[in-house]
Figure (cartoon, rainbow, N blue to C red):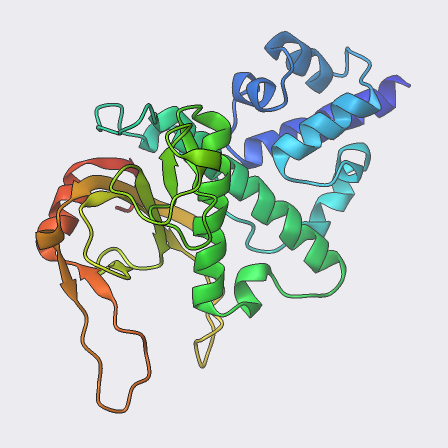
Length: 280
């Protein structure tokens, strides 16, 4: 029995270190105590199937990987998503409606675990990573929709706008019937993008905008270059209509005319950065 416990503990430590998580952070994410995590990693504490499930979910892996030996680590998906850096968050940024950097961090970490889990399952079935076969716009939409769905789980003051295609994406909880409104100036519009500027929306709006900038592979490349998913930055600011400009299109294009954040808006957002990795 002790050999099994040591194997489980060693595997937990391996996957925790891969995500750059402390024992305290893993305990928080799995709703367990730090001293319990430490004892389990040392093979000193028996662990129930329920707690194996909790810890594996927090690590973004299948529970079977915690009971297998180190030789099974080779089953991991090549180019697994890179962890969010705890040192990358700006404690001095300004966020509205009770939103805190801790809420944003938790949502980002949940996406990393989600993507790691999904890609592991795809890999086991000889399929490409999610970001490798989806159209770039579709994958970017998944990142943004995930943030809109998860942030309210951590910030009680915000709710996902339940109106179909309602604006903005996040609204103050309880301010509108059924937390649904077609259009309001209250709340936060959420975007995700592979680009560090030139972010787009449908209309020039006076609204809080938060953009999740990420790096990943793109299926649209003629010669795809596989890179691990990575959050590069998160930026947020209250933009005015004057911070937007309509994007043009060629005479032959059928692309929907959109509004783009102008230099003035991008400067506001980057001055109030929420997260940056070391490369930003």
